[in-house]
Length: 287
Length: 299
Image (cartoon, each protein chain N blue to C red):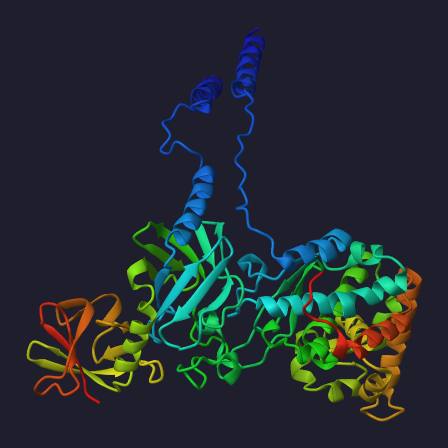
């Protein structure tokens, strides 16, 4: 008898919950509709800024090669034109696609000798025919991985103000910001000038408060990522006309910083120095 | 009576359960919509020369799920993709059409997806992978970065990175559809070494001594069959003789390889109506004209 009673109760409960469809929807459209919409929106925004986008590109999950600035113009639904601050090579045209995945996925899907340089294994980048003018003239990174760059990104945020790209292998967050039409003619040149000005610095010390902390390059060829004794972080940065722009906000001895502006040589600082707005941290070129 | 009531009660409840959600609803239009992407000359060429006649899809743009995620790879350059598309049709596929007298043979059996990759997979020890295939349906062709006008006219380069792989994988598909005779497996019998092939045989010279035309041939009878076939149809008679004579003109290894070739010749003729000597003649004739072949015009 108890068994039958139990069966009846379970059956009634099953009926009560089986057709419980009247839940409020969180979104008015289906996931598919929203994903298609986000793909179309991404295409529109990428092409919408005709002067193009500046990409703060940091290859490798470990950030040991630092960052580089690339400039991309998405000229139609297929083609993209790419330049870089690290090379004087003329703009290269290749193709891209935005496809639906976990969100809109941006893929640079045919070879572009500037953009894909960072993804070439050392097996290729040690070969002169893949090297770029004014950039590394020897191989960099391991034979099988090179600089571990990516060309396949999840677009986690897409707006006219900025686009956030997540590397699908490294999970690095890369930021694209729109180039103003007023600066489009000069921006690449100004970033290249910054590289030419700052990259020759061959050693740095941090100055925080009264402390001077020696920093060393993670990779002596790329010279765009520093470490200091006793700190876990790798301080990865790229060159900008104003100074240095770091991958994220870092903390050294309690001082947080993400952008350091360059101050021309003054007094004992014969090579000038980079500093935060408050002047509480300096990164001083030593050689 | 009690039992009867219980049975009726249970029956009614079960019936209700079955009926409870019987309302059918039509599926909404929830398919992913392809963004309209204008077709370029290569897209049109592939549609007209690969997809329509042969039902073959060439993926010349990088697609992550069709690539090899275990390695750092880069996409193929567009210009190299044009070259390989034209060269493969001319020098690797058309010979089959000429020998069989129809496109149907390729349409029925050729790998259905061919993915182009710019770089080669590089292993941590620096060795590289020349080509890979999955389930007899998809072939990855690597190293399009290196395919230029000069290399595109060089049969050695084209065989090494593209055409030998194509013929090799194509043979696997043929074998899946019509198995080769057991007599082939008996020739080298227990001497196949599976994954030890690269450690045991460092060069083709070492493998030929034991009756394997290449190191990879020693992996299994299946690979041996595809290796002998693909090397034979892509080599000149002189190149093939040189290869199998590495241990002497009358070596036992050479005799084993020729026995295998005889089985392959018979199998291809009896099962597929393909004379491999005519096929090789056709392939080599194409190779001899590569210097003047137009690699880039799409029409």
